[in-house]
Image (cartoon, rainbow, N blue to C red; front, side, top):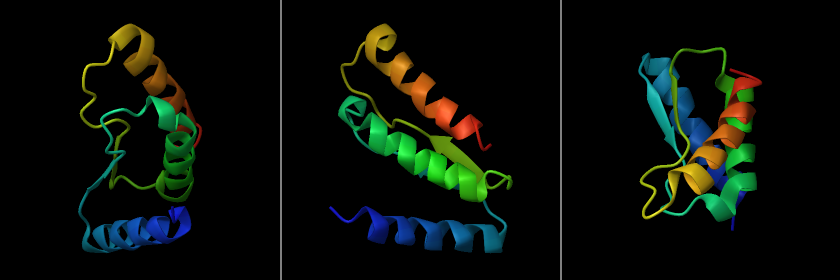
Length: 89
């Protein structure tokens, strides 16, 4: 309900991790990411655009998919999200 405010929190954490020279895992943490493809693509492409030139970022596009089919749900979701990351990182 507050994507800009939450993104500011994410950026503060990422900036501090980079400042300290450590890695940060950016995790889209939902059990059913399929309904959130557009939000996930926006999140990861924004992050990759800003931080993709740095080695500190580890992307985790879908944490803990539960009872989802690999071929029809998980793989297509990842293909879309990873493409949005790779255009910048």
